[in-house]
Length: 326
Image (cartoon, rainbow, N blue to C red; front, side):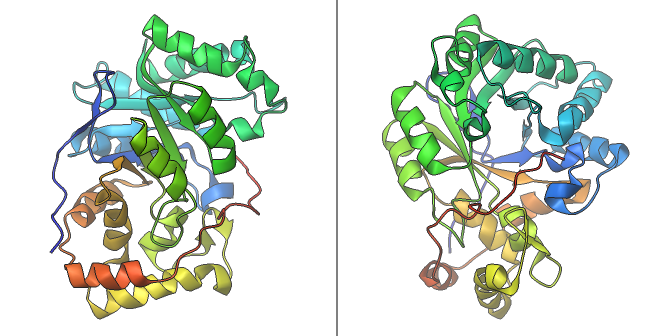
């Protein structure tokens, strides 16, 4: 029987930050129906943030672009109603390009941070990631001497962020940056889960080089949590039968052993010692409690043998995705 996940924390290098094994992704709390296929109103979002703050894993990840700023604004409302950030809550957000122009130089990075701090009601954050450099209109702006990456490192030097991270999709974009810059952490999403291992090489590299891996979207955008009977999307794209076939294979194993498919999907990430924390997207309070329950659901070793023997894809699962922050 694999060990149940408890409240142990993992240090992020020598930054002084320790993170719990689960983090909650808050993009859906910004109301992004184009990505998730459903709406999230403000009261539901606020109730979910409160549940994260009061739960066993008080760690959240957000971004300036999630819902055109609504995610950070809604989190900020709860921070303000609590009279400030509660003790023990870990904050992760991101530097983002200008969504209209695609500009992503140092000045834009500074502007993004200022907007984030204003929305959240904070003067600093724990982890600050450079976000989605592959979508910059001019990639050279990211790595130039006056670019967004250099500005990120300055922000860490200034103490505005304790840890500097890289959060992107494409592994081929991330790897050269990870090798050239001194990152403390990275976020990969949809690329290290039961049905896909596109980020395996990057996860191994990070572990060997002291970069904390925050593994996001273990549920493939919801399909490995809701199940194929209810899921209409896979990795944020409208799903056809071919896309859902790998999920159905996981479901079949879990069904025979009476195990929630979400528990298996989550624990695949949690049980890997190379993963510092697993980022699970939530859009309602009960999902916060359900995630904690899935984290400790008993799964026998024999079931893991079956699950890990299933075929999986190693290609980029979002190769055909059209990104829409709405």
